[in-house]
Image 1 (cartoon, one colour):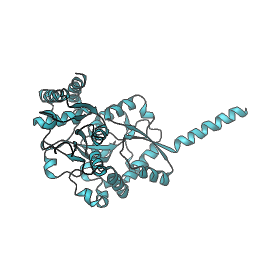
Image 2: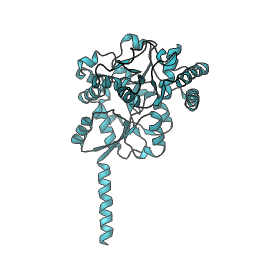
Image 3: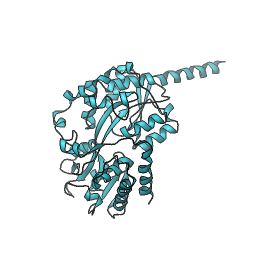
Image 4: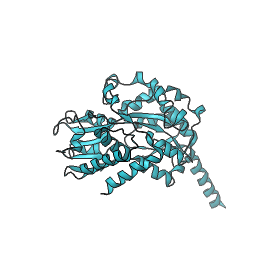
Length: 341
């Protein structure tokens, strides 16, 4: 009988521990640890973090049971509709996220999630080229990858971003539904892949790390990763968005369908959307904040940095990636061909 009571008490203790935990599934190097500590201090929930390097990896984990393991995920905008269609997330209770009002108007009713029914914007940014200043010149065009590569380079391991960049170079929309245009972009990537200077595909911060280490001269990366690397390696590392333009993205916070602690998840989303916390997040990540109330608290030098807040010329030639519904398969098929050949 004593053993039974011990097991029962142990089970209850595990239940209490689980209730006191928030499970965060997020991109690597994407949140200030001090923010997590502040959340724990205020609400008492310990934050347990798991990392992923691509949207595909995140979705695969959710489909393999992650919907019951995690409380918060942070997918890219063009993945949000399919995640909703697959039933992998639950609607937000707006009554528990009053700080949604702090979002800038362009992020309050996004085309990928009208009315923010399922998502709340986390960060936004661009995709561009990180490069070694001591080895190569600043790239004015994506031709340094696609025309006649003359230095070691790494491509991003992301379907829509990489095909989108190739499409921009060819003069097409990153959201084209024309199979021939997407196939042409695929051929361009295959051509780059066959170059003796091609070093592989890297997800997340992999490309940035290899450029910093001197193993590559160019890599396609997210802007915030490059900005941090440039600051940490002055004189060695630079970042540019080539003249043809690039892809824009928004990452959003969402709650998995069977999240073990949705109460803590709503508290976390609301916490991130506070003005000072939102500013702290962007000041750490070096990405642009979608939080209008946080803007006055962003470092002045970051507000003026076009690598973080792109100028009108870059925005004119760049596009947010959209979910294309059934036409997503065109991109998937071409990308599979690129990766397998």
